[in-house]
Image 1 (cartoon, one colour):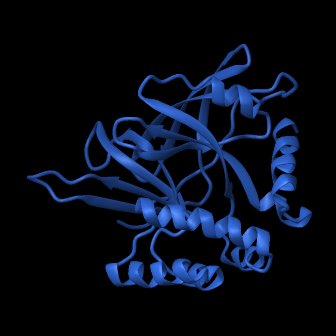
Image 2: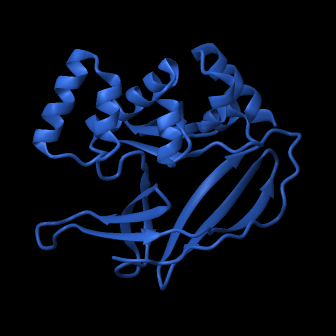
Length: 238
């Protein structure tokens, strides 16, 4: 596949052992120029050209970058990655950034302890503590629209550990809300084909909740895509 070639090339440059390469993936992220807020657009798929996908992102208010992140939420895989000096460092740098952005929830005391470990260069110890924190390793996407708790509600979306998290920012009159849903396989894609690109509406169904995300995918010219992909989500708890 086209993308695998570039993933292997990037990992080879970083010295990632061959048997650990596929625990990582390339992601598109965006940074808002005004606020500095960073969000993940999506993980690149096997049929995509990283260069074309990045260049096809057009925005006057945000920049788009390609980043390498781990692509597994299995704690056993984390343990395996932490045995290699190279992949431990990749996990450490990713987690360090996630903690600084507030993507990983930690108390002030925990942040103080993590800062001490960082100052000592205790990467393994840092990761052991960070892995226990809420939302560790979750992907944070750009705000989107959903009908939870009411129609046309703007929510922040997190995905990780087989869980979908919807966060509704608080206001002066209403406190922030959060819904957490266990995932058991699910999406339905509606596709419209264009030259080297597909515009699609992604509808994620849970028990009475629907999320609408509009994205643009760019493909290498040698990929034959099927019309539809089907998965399912199941609501678990709020």
